[in-house]
Amino acid sequence: MPGGFARVGFSQDATAIAMQRGGQAADVWVVSDRPVERETLLPQEHDSFTRSMPGSLPSRAAENLTWLGRYIERSEDTARVLRAYHVRLAETSDPETPLLADIRDYLEPFGIDVETAIPLGLISTLDSAVYSAGQIRDRFSPDGWLALKDLSKTIHQFAKTVAPGDDATRAMTVILRKLAGFSGLLHENMYRFTGWRFLEIGRRLERGIQIARMLARLTRKGAPDGALDMMLEIGDSVMTHRRQYPVQAGRRTVIDLLALDPLNPRSILFQLERLKAEIGMLPSVGAEGHMSPAAKEILQLNTAIAVMEPSDMTAQVIDDLASEIGGLYNSLAKAYFG
Image (cartoon, one colour):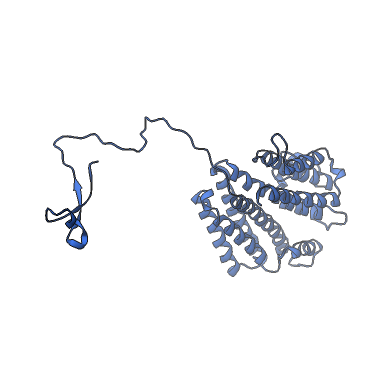
């Protein structure tokens, strides 16, 4: 080697190099009168290489990735509902109008108080996302972590300054934009290994549950005036509905777009299609060549919904569908998170 680190003594006695006996430490350089070839054990550019595939994913990491996806989607859905609520509150200045009262009753069991511009329930959900991400920081990019921390910082600042109405509407728009930025970073930059699949499964599970719950609520018989328009707004499908249906929003067209359209990334069927694909690619947990219980459940559920017509999907059917999608998590947890 071209140099090293040596002990130096001041006598011929070899034992005198000990530090306790007056020895010293010094750098040693080997000097040559001509260039020398550098030898190294490090891989060189021309050497052959083998691409290392990602190793097995610990069950705790898989669970945290799944819940990170769920918390992010839950936060986004809550922010969309709150934005729709505050837009209408700013227009009417009356929180007791039937539609606003209905939304307030819907959100209350989930710990979302609409009288607070930035509810504690929404802050708590985002804090849970930060906690889950903190357990698996080595599984996604530093930019993703910074985006999530920035989102958390923003919502905590808004909680101190934002008022209901127009102010809350603008705040929810900022939160939704930052949520979309975080999701985009993960989607575009994260390596497609097993961990990404669990993250994607968590997102699709939660989006399917939330859309189904809200759709059942706002398309039920006796829903308040304006419920269908609000559903399209929450489902980010207002413009799509205008392009695809030559009629005003009705119960059947809203259900067709937000439940049964396989090309709408906000529809229930779209979430089931993605879940079927991702669950089908998870490592096998049963006998070789046999589908896992979760894969069987999602296949049956996806098939059942794919052949339905809007007229078949009553509010009760849609509400039951939300519960069935939620039940998929239990099958996944039993197989992979134990």
